[in-house]
Image (cartoon, rainbow, N blue to C red; front, top):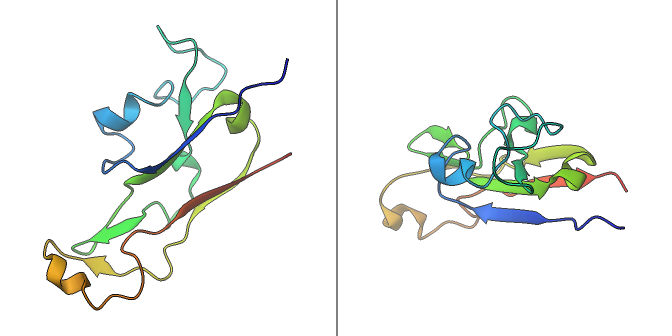
Length: 117
């Protein structure tokens, strides 16, 4: 039987350790060989696989935040080749939306992953 690969990705507006994000992810220790209590199928956040120095997807008031996530089923987690956030062209934003009016690039960086076939 072929596995049902599942990917959930997007702007969750919360960090990897927030309750709303962890409700979607597997065991907090990231052990993909240990089932979660209660849920036979879980998703695994790829955030821990981001390279050091690139563990954010937005800069808010000078501080990097990871609020954009990729969560995958176990079968895909076992096939991860790489994960990155393309933060090279983003700048810091503030609470004021007026500062974004002349912007030519998004205020969020894409989080990407590649998988082995």
